[in-house]
Amino acid sequence: MPAIGQQKLETIPLATAAILVCLAAALSLAAPGTLPWSLLVLAGAAVVAYWTIRWDAAMLIWLWVLSHGLLDWPSWIVRVTGFFNMTVPRFFFVGVLAACGFQLLLRSRPVVRFDRAVLWVMLGLLLWCAASATATGWLAQTAAVRTGPYFRFLGSLLFPFIAFFLMYNLTRNSRQTRWLLIVLGVYGWYALYISYLQYAAAMGLEGARAFIWPEYINDPNFGIHFNRGRGAFSSAPPQAALLIMLFFSDLLLIRTVRGPYRAALIVQAILIPPAIFFTGLRSAYLAFALCGAVWCLWGSRQLGLSKLSLALIAVIIGVAAFWGNLAQENRQTGGVAQVSPVEARFILLRQTWPIFSQSPLTGVGFGHFVDAQRELSQDPAATQGFSGTVLVEHNLFLNVLAETGLVGFAAVVAVFILIFRQSLQLYRKLPPTAMGTLSRPLVVVFWTVLVSYLIDATFRDSLWDVFANSLFWSFAGVIVGYNRLLEVENKSA
Image 1 (tube, rainbow, N blue to C red):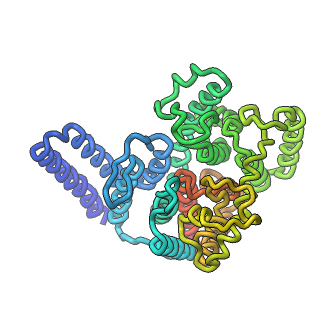
Image 2 (cartoon, one colour):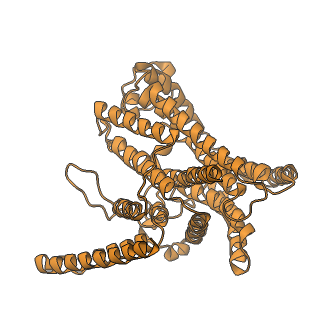
Image 3 (tube, rainbow, N blue to C red):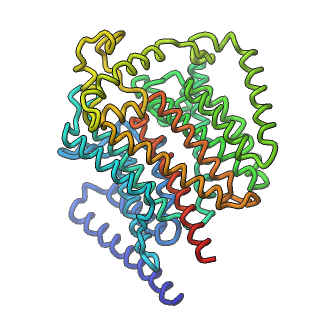
């Protein structure tokens, strides 16, 4: 059997190489004008094919997640009539699908598992949102959010859920997660580099922007939060989500490595809290504090309450020392007293009830909150303070409730409950003394990512954030995959 398997693995690369060579020859003859780009694409396909055959396709999913923070070039969009626009990450995702499918077929027993309740609920949520958007329109009527229904469905639901499914099926051993976290750390240095330069520029050192790459990040018209440490993203929230996960994954890896790499992780972990501050997001400060409490209580080997108490004392001292900066509105210097965003959220809260009341069971249509908002009657209780400008819902759960009704809301809540249940089962399966990457602290890192996501979703509709959803659901797929692996091991034992 080993000889047969080896022969299979040797034959497939040769066949793949032959096919790619034939395609390159055909393209050069049929369309000389496409050279050399066509050859570069084929060379990339060859690298992906070889990677898939020899190594781990799950890493490609992780690289796709990170591509949203480096390769999502606003000027590189292929517009297809009757189809959604294609960006670099979306082309990357198509390649990832092919690579993952290829690797699943290469298994000695090609099995695609759909054996978890959470997978069925996620599928139900996808179908419900798709049916809702189909019934009410895949394009919104309001010009400012016209692409909202299909953009949010594809980017923040369908693709991340597929990544979850693939990660779940491709999870095989603890080394996979170790490499995933290492790659995250490598990208983290780039994210920190950009963040510190952006903060320096925001504080008056404009020359710092000359060292920022890609160039479009320096464009004030690119996205929002220009004067904050938003990294390579178009807004600050995805940068905050990345940094919070990076911090706690660093704390995990610091325990398992030695030498210069450990020193580099310590330095990176020290640099992350200021970078979170540079985002200027009060929700990020809150999420980081709560995630720190979760880590102290369940991620520490000992003295969890003592560490939490010391951290709380440090926070109190810090707040007292910098109270002058905190009690004002300037986000660059730490101000958290800006009132207008809070007032806007109260306006949205008053608007959500009449919108939800229009169709409590099915909602007003996925991606159509703003359309319903603009059609509200001039009821002072619902529209007080509303100027008529576009103001999207700033709470994921309220938005789901208004757009997809009680059915969609129940499905979303069920998905998060089932995800947490899977992680809790994994935590209990792992022995307290387990060392290395696959240990209880890994689950606690996931809990910090879950807390960060939920806090973020409480203060904005996170379905507009493709990166944060891709990061969270891909990591969740790994956790659920490990839970299945340990179940199989326990049964065989």
